[in-house]
Length: 188
Ligand SMILES: Cc1cc2nc3c(=O)[nH]c(=O)nc-3n(C[C@H](O)[C@H](O)[C@H](O)COP(=O)(O)O)c2cc1C
Image (cartoon, rainbow, N blue to C red):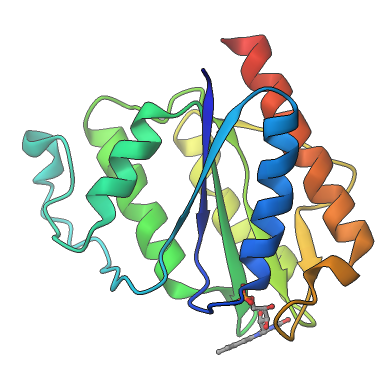
């Protein structure tokens, strides 16, 4: 069965980003595609050190747990990274993770090719669009397919547990999830 990996970059226990990903995953599953939500919470993700050892090893040599996530993405048909907005841009660890995931793919078997997905940003007040633009850079350079919706994949939420108050945001994410599943089914 086709599968989508959703990656939460929030460090919070009651993460709004996680609630948004759950809504997204629900819609993907409703449309016949399996999902798994992973988290960077508790991890200490390092930035790429440009050692280029992934070319020989086929994976990243940095020993911080990202390789397990890379292996799950490699086996999946879709990938959706989601980040809280921090100071107008994406939380740092997700960008470090995306840069390493992309480098491993590009320099090894190009496993990201034709995987379907897109980024999601969650913030209290502002910076979601720049966060999406930042994360969006990952997709075309890795020969991936980005699904659309009727707005950008952003949710307005600050305090824990408030994501569902942004009904338009959640509706946008649900349609995005449905589209991810439908594109996967059409292209597999
Ligand atoms: C260090 C820090 C910086 C933040 N910067 C912004 C910001 O620039 N814009 C914004 O809208 N929200 C900002 N926020 C609020 C979070 O994006 C918001 O609380 C979001 O819901 C967190 O998602 P989470 O619950 O999944 O961690 C910031 C929060 C923290 C901790």
